[in-house]
Image 1: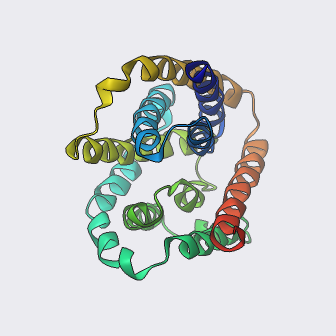
Image 2: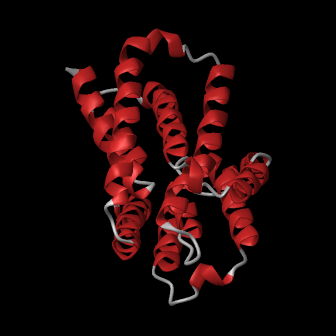
Length: 241
């Protein structure tokens, strides 16, 4: 029953991410934890599933990925976890989530111009810096960097594909870390295999849905979903018991 539940969740999550480029990962991780997997098992397995999902998304949107911007994001994000480790003890990760939620909400609904006034390279550089630093502080940084990808000069396909390329690198680093501390991924192959198949199929379904969506509707859905994720961070940081 666990495998069936998680496979269906992975399929739905991949359809959502394949369509708008986000939210699926958080949905899947939530279901994995609610289904009874411990964080010590769920988080490493989630990294493998999400790497597969993001790589498939890159393949699906390969013609529209902003490779130079993605490369800049990745290159800048790589050394930043070291800085995050220096400040992680000084920050309250719970309160930090709430603050990040407010920042994301403000950036998502900023007046015309907003983050768009930043040159593309500067925007990706800031996003990579934030992803690297706060990845070791709060874990999931997708909502934090998502507003930087919603640029008026980018097509909706470029948003989804480029963000997937950046996230692929982040998940690959996570897998390397978990492997380094001895997590036995192969012990869970029977659970991972159907999930990997599900996210591959789901991603292509999501891309088909994206193709049927107008740019205006994409931007609206992107902002609404991102706002919900931001409110979730605010709740987790400041309002939850």
